[in-house]
Image (cartoon, rainbow, N blue to C red; front, side, top):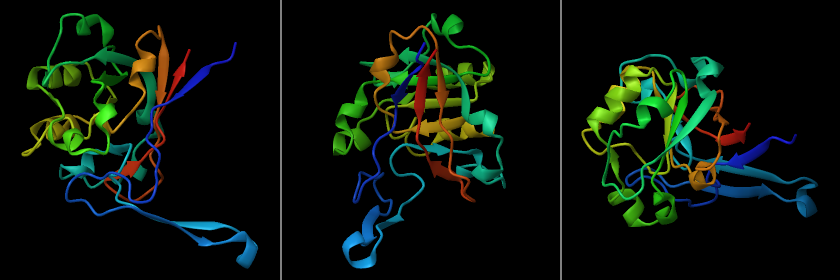
Length: 207
């Protein structure tokens, strides 16, 4: 009974797509086996590049680094909501039964196909306030999405979620592979880093 793992993360590479205004990612090999007898790489990256988790410190006056938060808040029963073809991701009646307390909710928009383009960063759908408040009422641990952000300036949805200790997992991919999964677990740990957010290797485990 092999449990299937599905990688929900974008690869970290040199000069990868970043949110407009953020510094670029530099990933370089700095030692080479032939000359130095070993290989080594150096990474300069913003914690909001690629697949990453926003913790409450990102946009609230919380003084806890992401490394201070309990590991249990980054792993949990998952559910995927089909949110394709919507400019605004709205509440649907079936979410009442699909979303369970303490779970990790993934929003599948299909927008990851535009990852790296202007379209991805400028025209992505956003979560509407009613759906956001429903997720808060359900006391979910984390909401993940295949878009760069659940909202735009002034980032009201970010603040609503983070003020209620719901982490935001951004820039996911492969969520279509979960649409037919009856049961799965989401595992998306941050680095043990003293920061407001962290790059993450997000994975779904089909149970």
